[in-house]
Image (cartoon, rainbow, N blue to C red; front, side):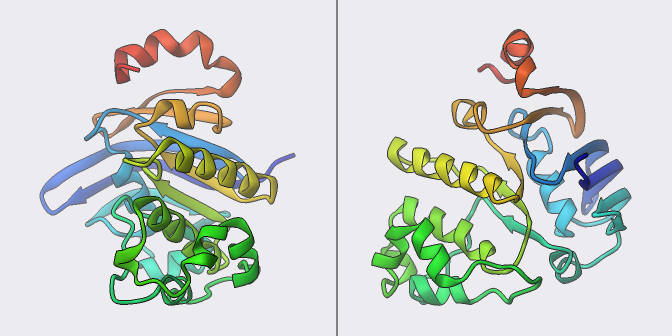
Length: 234
């Protein structure tokens, strides 16, 4: 029987005066890939940022492996084995690719070694000494994902990792997600690119106006296409 890694119950979140999340409920089991779907502004990225403590006020419950984290600062959430890869990637331009990789601290045991990361992302090994600004968009995205694998995180929150990338790079990222799932990682994807996310996810949650409005499993995808067309225009 699978164990629950993450559970949100009645999660509200604010940026200043703006009330963005209005009672989000979702659960993710260990080893599962879950995708949050929704239009821009639906609250998907804010959900990820709220999990790691990067929004303003939060109310409700965020349990990570059974531990309540709604009042924890981001560095303590990270130590529970959570890695966040933001849409803007956050690559340091003045550092080489390898220096970027080595920058985050190890927060939990079991992180990947540099050798393992370079085996998974051969491009990064070739570009190890290149400054962050010299990397292509695809290489920067690989680096952003690879960077959290060193930390020991087992729950990966990946925000729009396919955005603006060439099809061959998107295919490589899809392979990476399948490999990580096979190794027992738990992954939450926020994706606008439905064709990328659809074959990867075990389950889907659809968000609108800061709430979950629908959830369904991979096996129910076909029968929910009409509803997705309505909500997402896919």
